[in-house]
Length: 472
Picture 1 (cartoon, rainbow, N blue to C red):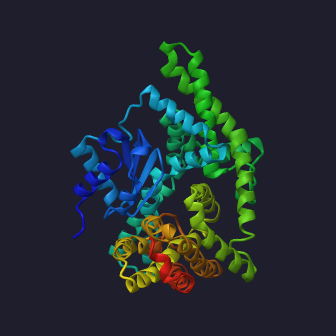
Picture 2: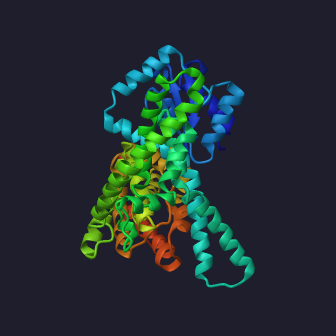
C-alpha cells in the first residue's frame, strides 16, 4: 500500500533531523526544497530508502524528489500540520543572512547568473505552458478548416489565452527581473512594456534608425533586444533607482524617485540597450542557425544527436536555465522554438532506459527498484524527468549515459524533420500541443519520442548488466 502524504511528510521531517532543523521549505514541480540549519543531521540513506521518495539532492538546501502533484501537498502539510515556515514567509535572522552571503561568495559569477535567470523565469513556467498549449490547440482547430461558429469561437478563445500571455511576455519578465534585482516591481513591468510599445518605431524613424524596407533589420524597432534587453534594462533600472533614492528627500521619494528613475532608464534603454542587445540577439540566432535548421542534413543529424544526448548533464549542473533566454529569443525572432523539441527527447531517453532497467530488476526480483520505476514512469512519460533521473538512472550511473545516447537518435530525427514548438515547458506527451502544426509538428514530435524510447531501451539493454543493479 502506498504511503499517504501526511505519513510521508512526517517521515521526511524525522529523517532530516526534525522540525527544529528546518529553516524554511518551498515546493518545486516534482520536489520539495528544505533549507536546513544543520545538514549533518540528515539521515540521507534512510531518506533515500523511504517509500515515496524518488531522489535526494543538496546539502544546506535539501531537495527531496517526491513526484509531480505531491510536492505542493507535502509542503501544505509541512505548513498546516507541523507549523513549518514556507520560504516566502520566513524572515531571516542575521546568522542566516550571514550564511546565505557566505554561500553566495562560494559561487562564481556564472553560477549566480544562472540562478538569477532561473529565478526570473521559473515562476513563469506554468503560464508559458498554458499559453503554449492553448496556442497549439487553437492552431489545430484553425488547421482543420472548420467554419462552424462554435469551433471558431473556441479557437479564438484559445488563441486569446495564448497571446494574452506570450504577447506581453516582456512585461512579466520585467516584473520578475525587478524582484531579483531589487527594483520596484511596477517600474520593472513598465520597462518591459516600453520595449514592446509601438512608439519605439516612431522614435526610431525620428532618429533615423528605422529601416522602412525591412523593419525587422532596423537598428531600433519594437521588441528589439527581446528578453535579454529587458533583463539588462531592469538591472540598470535597479541601479538607477537605488542611486536616486539615496539622494532624494524622504518626503519627495514617492514622487521623484520613480519619475527620475524611469526617465533616465528609458533613455538608456532606447538609445543603448535595445540596439546593442538586438545586435547580440540577431548574432546569436544566426549562430544557432548554423546548427539548428541547417540546409545540410548531416549537420542536423549530428547537432540533433549531440544536443539531445548532452541535455540532461546540463540539467544536472543547473546550466539548462541558461537556455531559457535562448528559447525566448527564438520565439521572438523566429516565431517558434526549434531547440526545445530536440532537447525534449532527453526525457524520453530516460523513459526507455528505465523500462530496460525494470525488466532487469524483475529478473533478480529487485522490489525497491521496480517500485521506484513504476511510480516514476508515468511522470517521465508526461515530461517530468526528475523522479527517473534522481531515483533510477543517476544512482546507477551507466544508465544515465545510455539514456542520453538513446535520446540522441530522437533528437537527430526531430532536428532533421524541422519540428518547432510554439512555447516551452515540460517535455514528453504533455508537450505535444506545444508543437506548431499537426502533421509537421505534433505527429513528427511523437515519432521522435518513440524513437527516443526505443533508443534508450536498446542502448541500456545491451550496455547495462543485471549484476549492476544488485548493490543499488
